[in-house]
Image (tube, rainbow, N blue to C red; front, side, top):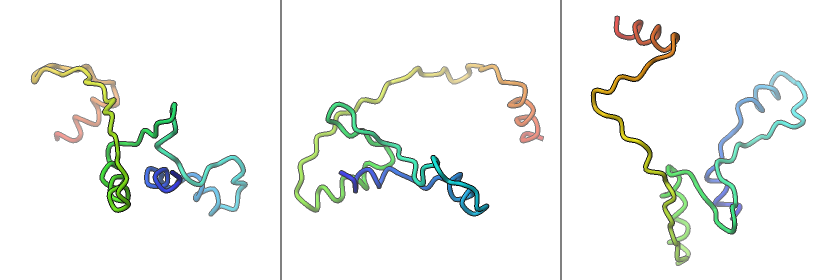
Length: 96
């Protein structure tokens, strides 16, 4: 279980920046985990699926996948979405 959780974790840049400046790192996690155990299940980020399944298949462990993604709302092709002021500013700079 710990190995699976480690695959869905990444280094916390704030921790290492604070450590390099020789400030206290008390209360700052070294790793940020993108998964948690909920009601006996281990939900993982979509991008980690292949990495998670490889060790399972190597050890002949059967995996049940229950896809809980939400379908979301589709946008029409030409639908105009209002931008925040800063977004409009950066968009204009990109297009020029």
